[in-house]
Image 1 (cartoon, rainbow, N blue to C red):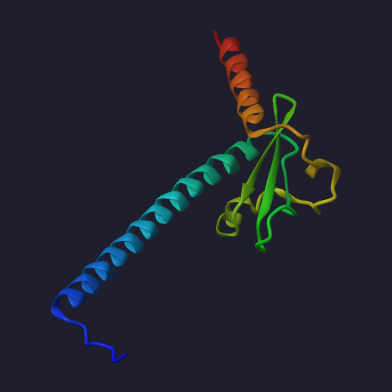
Image 2 (tube, rainbow, N blue to C red):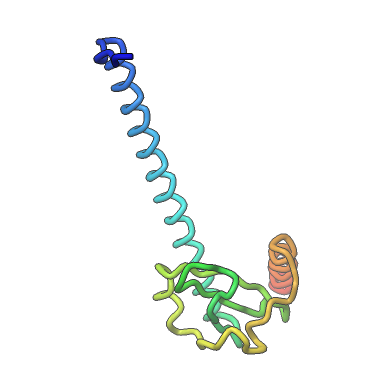
Length: 132
């Protein structure tokens, strides 16, 4: 069977599909930039919080396959809170003590993300009540 050359309708459909694909790619890139910006803002706040707590450390993230990822471990209200830190944000954490992943201060305590933020809310509430 001989293949037919594309007609105007086929060409128009292909051009439309290519435009839709290009638009989708741009939307994905915009979304990734927004996400990365939000993570950078979070990293700034975690770095600041780390300077305001004692004993904060940062260690390689053994649970991430990509190289350069780290985990910042802080004690807030005497309880552990930790955050993954992307390689692009490592410069914000140069002031922290860098420890190996097997350091006792860099061991996950088993709490969930929800637990972590509940601890932060409880500690924030306790501090705010002290100031009254």
